[in-house]
Image 1 (cartoon, rainbow, N blue to C red):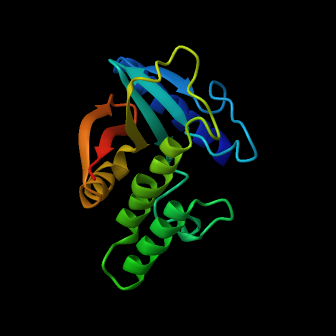
Image 2: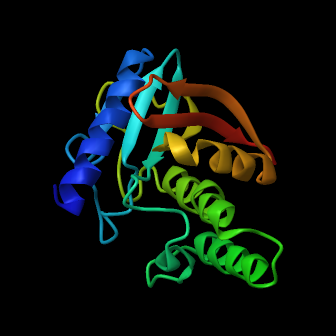
Length: 179
């Protein structure tokens, strides 16, 4: 199995787990058309249940939190994303934060909030999703990363609303960030 096939397979499992938990799931590749010059800056999924709209990111086993590129500023980074990347890298460099947790913080404080802020700018909510719903965040990773991601959520001041774990190898945290 190629790396791309492995990633697609994990994404499929992650979405199946959300569906099993009662969510209607929209795939970022096929169900969420991008718009504008930054059309690729959109979530991996949007999941809807009971008035909540989950803006979600998936990291497969092929995308570990220790990946060096997660700490490198990208040309299309928002100021918030740039600040988060550099702040995490600095804390890791001085020994305040292990890379295994820091990578998750980059997703929790940088990437997912950036996706939420870009609703209507780089993508629209799918048809049938009530825009008056409560926007929350979703972060899906392999089960073996779940405890490290939970520590990162705690570090970031997140309030976990739901944990989706169906035994298929993926864990999803549905959360809100406290101010």
